[in-house]
Every structure is written in C-alpha cells, then in structure tokens.
Image (tube, rainbow, N blue to C red):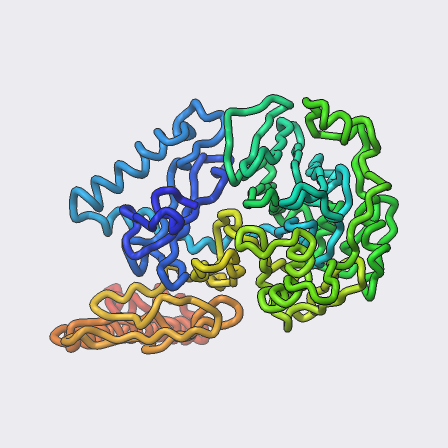
Length: 546
C-alpha cells in the first residue's frame, strides 16, 4: 500500500482526494526507475485522473528507489520528492495549474498489469495451491513450499507441533519458519518469535520485530509472512506469470490446471478425484528438503536437536487425520455454528484440534460452496475448483499483499478476519483510445465504472448542444461503442454548421476541378495532341506568320 493513502491508517489521502486507498508497484521500472500507482474510491472502483484530481498518477522516480539507489532518479525518497511531490505542490496545492500537471501525469489504468498467482499456507496446516487446489498436510519437519531449479528459486517451510493452552502438544503442526532464496539474492529467513516475527539475512538476525513481513525479489516473486495470535503463521507466495510450468512443491505446479497440482518429487501424482488422506500425507512428506539444500539457520540447541540432526521429515509423527469430536463435546456445537462456507472443514479441524474458537485463533475462508467441490476423506479436507471457475485462488486470511493493477478493493468487514477476494475491475481498452475515459468538457458523465458490459451516459450542461454518442458501452474486446461526445455552446451551433458547410463546399470544388482536369487529359490523348499544347491553344491561340 501507499503509506500516504492507506485505508488501514485512516485513508488520509492529501495528494489523492476522493480516494481512500492507493497502492504502488513494488518495483521500479528497470530502465528508467519510474513507478506506477493506482488509487481506489470508497466503492472500490479505480479512480482516474480523467475523472478526478484524486486519481493515481505515474511517478518519474519510484518512491522506494531502484538499484543502484545512489544515482538520480533512483535515490529512495529524495528522487521521488524532487521530481514528483514538489511538482504536485507547485501545480495543485500552491497554484491553480493542476490540470496541466494531470495532463502530463495521466492515470494508466494499470491495463498492462498482469496479476501474480497466489499460493497460501495457513492454520494447522492447510494449503491452497497456485491453481486453486486446497488440501491439508500436517507433517513435522522442513519442506519445499516452492522449488524451481530452472529459475533458481527455493522457498522452504519449517513446521512444529501445535502447543495447546494447557501446555500439551496437539496432533497437528503449524509453520514456525520460512526461508527463501532467489537467484543470487541473499538467503532470507522469517521465523516466529513469540507473537512476532524475526528476520534473518544470511544467518544474521536483523533488528526487526514485526507481525507481518513481506519479501520481494528482483524476479517479481513476493512472499508475505504474517504472525497471528496463538502462534499461527500464515504465508502467501506470489509468483509472476513467467513462472508458469516452472514450479513444484507443496504449493503445486502453476499451469492453470488444478488436476496435476499435487506432483511428487519423483514425478508421480496424487489422484485428483477422491484421494485418500494417506495419499495426500505421503505427497506432503515426500517434499521434505535435503540437508544440503537447507536454507534454514540452526543457531540454538533446540533447532540442532529437533531439525538439523534428525531427518527433515519426522516419520514418527502422525497427525490427527480427522478433527477430534467425541460425542457430547460442547465445542462441536459451537464449531458447527461458526465454521461455515467453503472453508468449513479447515476451520472445524483447526478449532477442534487447538481446542479454541477465539477470534484470533480461527481462520475463516471466503470460499463459497458453489465454487468448490468439497470432500473429506478422514485424513484431509480436499477441494478442487470447478473447471468453469477461475483458477486463481480466492483466499486471503487477513490483508493480502498489496498488489497493483486491475482489481477492485472490496469493503472490509471490521468484525471479521477475512478479506474478500479481488475481482477484475478494468477491461483493457483499445489501442486507439486513451483510457482516462471520455472527458466531456461542458458536460457530465453518469459514472466512473469501466467494467465490461457497463454503459456510460453523457449529457451537456445547459446552453450546450451535444455532438456524438449519448451512450457508450464497454464490449468484450475492451473497445467502446459509439463516438466520442462533444458539447458545443448553442450560440456557436450555427457557426459550427456554417464552417462545416464551407469546408464541404471547398472539398467539393477541389474534387470537381480535379475531375475536369482528368477529363481534358483523356480528350487530349484521344486527339493525340499534347495536353500542354491543348491548354496553350485554349488560353492563347498561336499567331499566323504573314
């Protein structure tokens, strides 16, 4: 999110009035160091500078800088202030020339943005792959979340047993640490330390203690780790589209095909129809890391004894494959009332295993029943999205990683820990048309929503007459029906029509002269008389010699 306009911080949007939330592209343009920004209004619609001075604007210098950081315009903070913020102050806050500023900084509409794919890990211990397959695997050890040797990307997770409030250990596991490395980057590890997160870079502890840590790599890969009360850690991995068919691990093969997500390290696969709990558990256990490939830090006796010396997957630990719920358990009734919807099985498992239904301990998924085919096989809850549904996951626990582009931010329910999924908001416009849609001077437009199938109606102010289309609709290919509307003052209507008639007369005369010259040329060719002589005899007859 843009810290100068963040709905989590009260939406104090000094530079973007009419907006309640803005997001920035995380990385600057490699070539120019420029940045991009999108802003949203209270209804969740994208705000464009063609409609409001509060629209998102591109930046000549990214606010967070760009490598090598020391050279303008790549200096974090300073370059952006000098090239973008000061110009805004001069044009929009200290003078009335904001129109000039916005003409040179029009909203892009983020139409070239390609949203990343998300894989999610949460609870005790549930996964949603990049292609939308959900399953539970509660193994104890160290495992690959994402393994991509061809792209030199490795994201690993360490799990530990869940400790109940009475001090006993439950037959379930949760994430305690995540380590990652991309190409030639440093090795980053984010591990739980109480209810906060500790960050290590190349095995050295950094002076950070946060509840949420987001790591971005130059390849476009993003990893968000978030700590929840009760010791649970949720992980969201975002991958750009060019990682398609280059991922393996517990978050699956990213290729828009849910049926082949659960591939083992040896190349086998878990059946996509009615898999048993044992098959799912064996799949997860098979993605344990090797000691040579480990990215984790073992800097305490506990870590050495629990993870470094033993096998990376503990074969002696078996989780509770089905949620405990003995007859007469009063918690079962409470769970039935709370855990509903597409994620009910995950919610029920976590609540009964941890023996807690506190708000901060439960994770409720926003997965409508009509979008998932749920199955429970005693050992795991497993769901597949229907083929006709979008394959992108529709799950985030609390706040999803800030992403920039063609989405609508839905209103958040403050009494719930869930955030509704992001839906498409912008249809790509045609290349011939500016996306800051239809600024109608001396007129009005009845909305700012530019969704496919949406119709905009235009009208002129009193004393003005409209030329062009009064209605335009966004069609499937991103173009708009009708013609650009214009509003002319009624006193000038006769002048405009007269000017059009005069120009039309000139064009008609030019065409007639050209046709006449062509006719004379054809007549001259028929008489085999040079056209030049014909013209000269017509204009000046030759004199006879005496």
